[in-house]
Length: 391
Image (cartoon, rainbow, N blue to C red):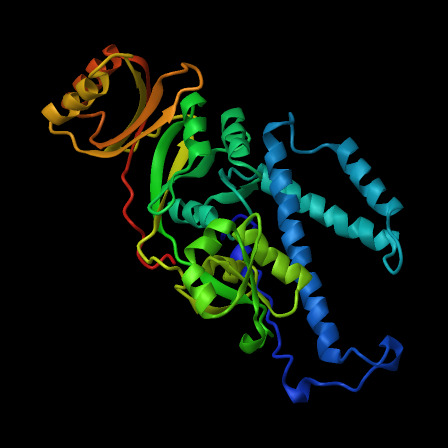
């Protein structure tokens, strides 16, 4: 991400081919006679890689504080940080070295806070499909990892983040219930969508012998979607809470004979080798992501989303849908969830092709609002097309 000091995809360390005989060094008796020079360097590379990732995480949190304090500079807080670091400098690290290092880190944090950059939040670890969708929406944004979908909504609503990206439905898995429920209660509006083909890869550490891979880690859904490949290769699947997090675990813990199933982007982000790609059972799976904002944009849209609860009587849903049919407005999605606020009723999610700049569309929406108990307009935005070559 050029221009913002957070070039995530550039943090791919040039691992050496540690299996090359010419890189071998004599055994070092001081290290128990087991570690070679190449093995030590490999561990240093792994540590350096993790340091870079942790620095990025720290910068993310630093940027998020800019809307929560009156000014960027805070001498008292800076003194607290430096004092804490100096007190906890241990072993080979001199306090003065740490003081200078963290003074530079604080300077870089303040530089990023001063910049007029936009933040977009996504649920999950870096390297996830949600981050891929965010990068496809706007490559100039700063991408902020959030723990849960609710955190993404809350951060955008509070102004900590400018935008949020959330998956709303999958071709194979159907609607994402947690996200759809959040859409019912939020005041955020939809300003864009990304339709992302989902393709999985088997990722391993750069120095892994492919014949030794016997265990794969990933999210349960990813494992289920690659079940055929897992069985053909006689692999032992191990569920992990997040596919991108599994990739990070592989880099950090380096379990022997193991790989992960994740996106190609995760391979780039975590400096992993793609052993095989396109290993999913169905190659036509598409995830649809929504871009959320506090305010609608001035960019003209050609797709709209609404939420409504119809009257609790026979034919109520039919009458709503008939309004769109009579106006020859094409519906692209209709979904329902039980209403938590109105027990015994259902909340309907409706997407359709059309623009609020079209008087015919506005007339239909006005009539729908009049004939429903609950009505919410979620936004008018540019329709997304499946991204080619994004796997």
